[in-house]
Length: 218
Image 1 (cartoon, rainbow, N blue to C red):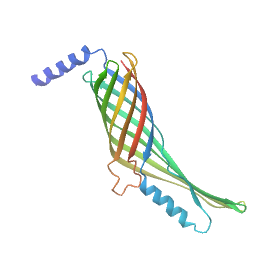
Image 2 (cartoon, rainbow, N blue to C red):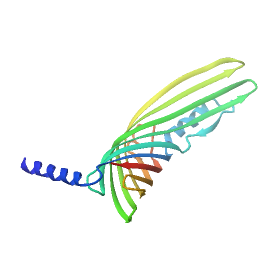
Image 3 (tube, rainbow, N blue to C red):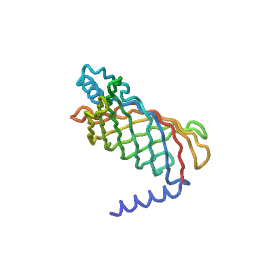
Image 4 (cartoon, helix red, strand yellow):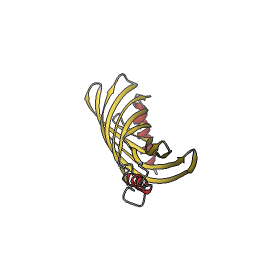
């Protein structure tokens, strides 16, 4: 018990001796997601109404994401904390002529949350490179909306949704430029690994992530 108390006391002294205790970060980015089974589902939907001339006009393209974190300085170079991120993309099947209109929208989004750790290496007085690791859970939702109208008569007007819960890890590397003692900007590249990608889950977020961000240390 005494050893534990001594360790916590030394840890407290180390933290309070540092000029910075926490770092709050906001990182918009761009993601390239696998979503292989959703691509297959979209193709099946195109073929299901064969003969209507339906085409896939959007196919889950790379899209913007938004993440944020609050990390604690265990040492001047090592940080631990929590993170969250919002991911999204979508697809559309469509056909239209003088007689009617068909449209299927498939919108998928995920809310990622978990733990994050980062280690920094100083290159220059105001420039660092870092390695970062995130791990946690992704709560995903696929919203589907299908509508088919012929001669102003609605033949199909259906909505459905599917939810998935996946585990993930995301290693990344990047550069951080310190504007002053409190503010910094960063750029990083990483790979989001969806650990449930090869199970029965239909939503697979695996893919490259590019991010730029701003952080405030206090």
